[in-house]
Amino acid sequence: MPKVLISDKMSPLAEKTFKDRGVEVDYKPGLDKDELLKIIGDYDGLAIRSSTKVTPKVLEAAKNLKVVGRAGIGVDNVDVPAATNAGVVVMNTPFGNSITTAEHAIAMMMALVRQIPQANASTHAGKWEKSKFMGMEITGKTLGLIGCGNIGSVVAERALGLKMKVVAYDPFLAPERAADLGITKVELDDVFAKADVITLHTPLTDQTRGVVGVEAFKKMKDGVRIVNCARGGLIDEAALLDALNSGKVAGAALDVFEVEPATDNPLFGHDNVICTPHLGASTTEAQVNVALQVAEQMADYLLTGGVTNALNMPSLSAEEAPKLKPYMTLAEQIGGFAGQLTEHGLKRIMVEYEGAVAELNTKPLTAVVLEGLLSPLMSSVNMVNAPVIAKERNIQVTEVKHDREGDYHTLIKLTVETEKQTRTVTGTLFANQAPRIVEINGVRLEAEVEPNMLYVINDDKPGFIGALGSLLGYNGVNIATFALGRKIEGEEAVCLVAVDQPVQDIVLDQVAALAHVRQAKRLTF
Ligand SMILES: NC(=O)C1=CN([C@@H]2O[C@H](COP(=O)(O)OP(=O)(O)OC[C@H]3O[C@@H](n4cnc5c(N)ncnc54)[C@H](O)[C@@H]3O)[C@@H](O)[C@H]2O)C=CC1
Ligand SMILES: O=C(O)C(=O)COP(=O)(O)O
Image (cartoon, rainbow, N blue to C red):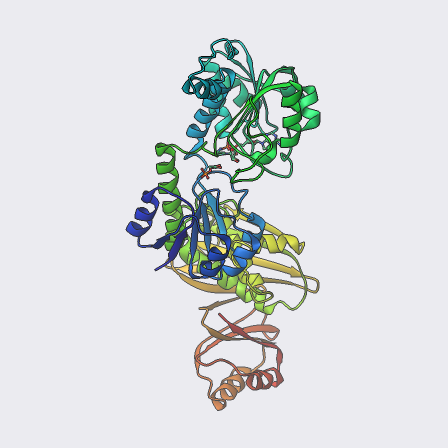
């Protein structure tokens, strides 16, 4: 039974869902770094929110880890490239808390323009400072969005309902989508120049880090207000403090901080700054959504291989997974076959899908072909990291789907080009479930892949088969199946033999020394 660790505070529904699905689960929120390092090796899955940091060190210690599930959206606390290299799928729940977070941004904006937290504290203190708290009416004012994805769009809709004008900077926002929303797509500098209130809704990436900094403040209207419910690093906090002190910025509402948990921050205590401790996603509704969703997604992956909302792997629905399963085996065998025969640097590979398989989601199959191909050549390869490894090594990967139907109702053909030669391996499924190799280098044959195999290329001459059979028998190697093929009588032939015992080096040398043998290789699956 797969085992999952929940290392951040999460709705009890996550734990319940894992158990109901047949996944063992430990709920240990608030583990410190060292405690996590000590126990992570026991788990197949790790369910987190924003507190747990999934660093290369954690991934190194996580010897059995297959999936990290983020009950929420931002994954900047996960080293995704390192997870990919370690073959660990990283998934999030991209919609579960977006409305709730957008509502928090709107609440923060309203609190900011009417100084509600400050007025509340003052009134509780018995001061009745009615003339101190003069607000700004938002009707007719311009809200500038930086980032207009799921959350930004909801914020835009709500702001329009509050009778604000909305401009948005988002390089990936389609003009049609902006028009549908009823907002204006503009450049970043226009957001700075036009907005009375600026709100941020992008992920934290190398491109977005510090997007609101010294230069940006110079371009803003005097008395602008800033709302950040996305990520702390998007705003240069030192520059914000200066802009607040100079009066350039009239106020800031911050839910997120450069360093979290934020217990000591230069902006704390400033009269015009209101803060919440990363509460954007903290409503009962959103936490139920993300907990259920992350547990279902992780259970799907661990139990069926289904992949939803992964950031480093193609999607594969729980319905598709069983249909693809026999093809996965075939894809791995074809890849493994070619990989074990590869002796020179890989340059290009092409995976062709024909017939029934071409109707399916082939992205995961190509990843598995690559896994099979690269596994004999390097360690720790799986379908998550294989495409990245191929890219890093400049191996060009092409996927082709053919409409045509050939002699077989379904076929996967792998062409591998190395520095020295081009090789092909083709396979099919018999009765939609039993993988068979049906072609090697243009030679047709029919072979089931077995754990121990012998692959021989020989001259098509009388006496070879008998000699090979006798040699194996003499060495106590029992033949399970024997497949033969040739293109032209008397020329090169391919022989694929499944044997019941591993082929020892000494036997392999003797096979290679037989008359008419051009190449002999041991294959294991
Ligand atoms: N405070 C909180 O509790 C929460 C914070 N968040 C944060 O909000 C962020 C946004 O979430 P979603 O809207 O769901 O993500 P999303 O992926 O739907 O939208 C992000 C948008 O940012 C845009 N973008 C990317 N690079 C950009 C750039 N350089 N300049 C301008 N726009 C850029 C993208 O095109 C995309 O449309 C998350 O990445 C997360 O960090 C999310 C949930 C809760
Ligand atoms: O979903 C996100 O990106 C969030 O920032 C929410 O964070 P949290 O799960 O509340 O720690």
